[in-house]
Image (tube, rainbow over all chains, first blue to last red):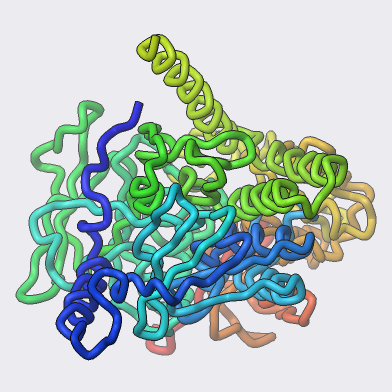
Length: 418
Length: 170
């Protein structure tokens, strides 16, 4: 089963920017001595590496350090000006076991990973956008320092992370309505408060943690609303903001947001178990900011372009590239890890990245069967421990479902072929 | 998960009494002891490793709840700042005739000053009593999770889990 890509890169605003650059490049073509398309794609500018990684977040960094440590010539590419992905805005202490740096803040885990990656001799290209993938997933088209170049690798990892889901309601386009992740970036990276009176929509871990961090940054969180009958995230995260005086209203949603040119107030409403608003339960809140924390979806456009087969698994955030237990997609040599392989959290992303790093190093002959097996064993047992318990179990089952469905599809295709 | 926790984010006292991390009434009357409000199976175990007395055990299955050995716990409080869920507290009902000592993690600025009178705040964020700040611990090894010790009226020992400054005009 290969669902048709609904949008591909054209949906992405970054792509629009790139396209403008291309048009610009095309208009300047005459100034160049090269001809046409070859100039645009920079035929001369091929960068050779053994292992290319798109995205320097927890998954990408972990893959880089495992592969690099084994001796693989590794190049990591990230569109941001600093590596680390979302780790550097995670100022809270992480759950986990001792081996998972439990009790350590995400930002400090990020610094340790960077240090180790550097020691492993990994090359990093920052401020570099990967905008295309060709040649059976072996060639990446990148824009680096204003010029278009290509990277050729024997193995490629897409560790491109996730994007926040949107929620539409009357007034949702007013300035002041933003993603919870965006608010977290503003507060923890740029040290800017998006507003002072916040309504958080969604009580998953992102909603609860960002609500807490907004309180730490000095904002008032007026309420957290959750459409489901139960709080989505960890109880301890909920307790933390409750004792700071933040109400969490389950079976509530935002009905409308009001304001002249910016958010000035919001109406919330209770909903029944058929998801219908209950008239008369409206409440008006004095807020200037609405944070939307209603889940994430994998950013896997490059996998679509490369021709990877996908499946829709709601628990993993939507369309997810099929991958085997070593995170390899249906395109040989092309891997996914972290949120791009199904929404999880940073600890699991790091372990998935490590799996890829080891598998790539093994595939290229830098690790013996025995070495790879023992490293994989350790990583898998750590993944097992993360994916236990009621929260982890759901993810484990979703990942299993993905693999089972892949096998079903395979046999279906075989039947059709004959 | 307990319904009180999953619906409201506040653990009901009845549910808390069943937590394997909660000490007995007798133990709290003897002196400082930690009070672990961790009742959800999360894969997490730093409390077990930080405890120098072996008083907290999670075990091999790291999703299991932390179990407190109240006799081994001497109330040193090292586990309070390491808990990523900020779910470990400390209670000492032997503190004085009228007052109990309560400690909790507090990751906000400004920090209160020792000797200050503040409101003791419960799990729902309500100010229930006045309390005095006894200790504010913020050493480097706590990694930016300060721990506040409050003396609270004894009957509030199991309620106070946060504090609020008393505004001047009140």
